[in-house]
Length: 170
Length: 466
Image (cartoon, rainbow over all chains, first blue to last red; front, side):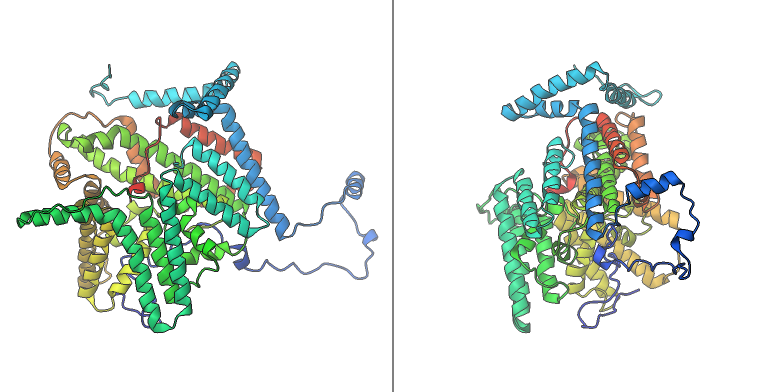
């Protein structure tokens, strides 16, 4: 099997090139929005010219109708609006993750500060973290992390049957 | 500044919110990302930011000249551009190696000389950004990508911090069009990006670090102290470690870029599932293997001149690919092993055609073990150490280093190759409809789990040295 197909210019092959990837690695993400296929067309209209809209039956109860009259739904978002909404959603997700970790993994900044050379920033972070960790420990929020760590350390210490235990360092 | 650190987390939060606050002015956004990338790179050594700038200016200048010149001069200019990039790479990465080898050679002939030895510090990621520079110049010459609209674009292309120090090698044709306008972030991209970051963090800080610290490093340091089981475990462990380490970096880089609105190509595709070496190189470090294909194998002649020529070309390509990884004979031998096996496969296909001679399961096992043999060369600091590892595979002794947890991590690291190929995309597709609070809590819980079990401290990624 050879890979001697050549492109139109006669210089660069159009295909293969064993043993390397045949295709350029595709992106794991969807195509950029400007290259997306056009949206599907709307279904055929069911508008009845002769009918009066007020005569058509409706399933909404009076309260719903009143609510819709009082608070009419917002017009559909354009592309910019959808993009801004997705960005806000992502930002909220990231902030929620950061807040969660600030509470349940508060010891992490403390560990970081203790590993740094002495200085104003590590010193300040260490002092603030110590207070924060102590305050949170009152509510027991450090227990999930601590419990997980103890389980992991126990798994690390485990040995096969008949295997010598891990040598302890003096 | 490593990805799995608190410092990087704080840096990324700042970059993320600032970059998206500049979304109405794409030029300023790119300038901010460039400055942030330089700051990121300066955390290793600020002096090399100058090298990064110089390299970008040179490639931009050559690209612009190529676009303005008639045919004959273009070839000369592209040669100049490639040569300058290789000169930068050669000086920083191979100067010491070649001087040392030249000194030994002269000594053998009795012409001992004091050669100018310099302690050249290797700038982190130099192999990646010089290869990007070469691909930019050559692609402009070939007409595959138009020259960048501004120097800022080329600088950001080469310096963009997610891929700067360990790839993937993102080409101009992938990234420059994305720089033309403010990117758009979709829920799908964001969810996928977040999941890739979590998955990469898990692979690096839990699997790779645990195996590295408690098994691979001690055994490779002194193979003579261990029996066959420990040595075999260390070899398999290194196969899992290097995959989890490098693919983790790629995953995190792709995820971080996605949160900033940019799309990077995939770099790994379950490589240990490969049933041949050819297939392995279509799944491992795809951005490098496709780079070697387009800018080395094809210019050498590819497979256009028959079987013998294609075998020679693939062998040369793989040996030089080995040398790209580091200035040492062990890397050359690693490349030669991969090249040699591919030559054998190629001859086999020429003899038997496309008939399936070996069952897939056997092919996967054989390929995996050849790859593991290569990893011994790749990891060992010398041939003596590699030989000591191979000899140790026949030594009977007690099991000292391998523990149930390490065995579970090795098996798990291999088993993940048999997950559905696009599992993370599938999960992202389901989670993208979740409320931000739910997803935030889920991601936070995953981070907490990883933080609780990871070893103290983070070792640098293996591919930083390349």
